[in-house]
Image 1 (cartoon, rainbow, N blue to C red):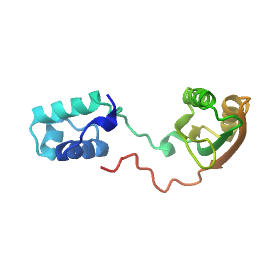
Image 2: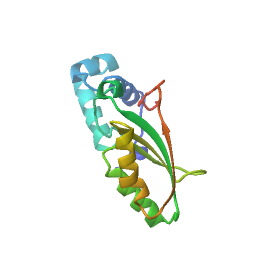
Image 3: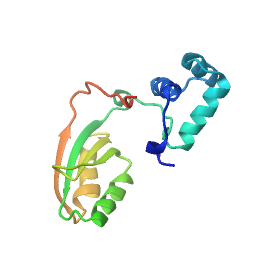
Length: 156
């Protein structure tokens, strides 16, 4: 099902807001905070999962705890055919270092968020995943020196 096709009412939005804050809430606690019955909470959350509105539930680990370097990378391809864009997107999507991949307009073709243990590992990643690709025309990398905000919540 297309997540955009589902109508979200006030109860769905309350449940989603609570889950975005803490997905480890028990169903009973989620229901209590959302002011619905546990059965309603369970049914609604299952519907949101089945519809693809809730993509997955994860624990967010602090990069400071893991260590390493975060890079924001702009990539421009030499050829922007639909096939080449899809091929590159699949290629970088398979790289474990890539945390996020966005196909963008009005500038580079892609913006990536990459996390690696150190600058040497970034260099190896860039060579293996980016510059070794014949269709990559340009790569610009920006290294994060401080994370001022990281909020994966989607405004509801």
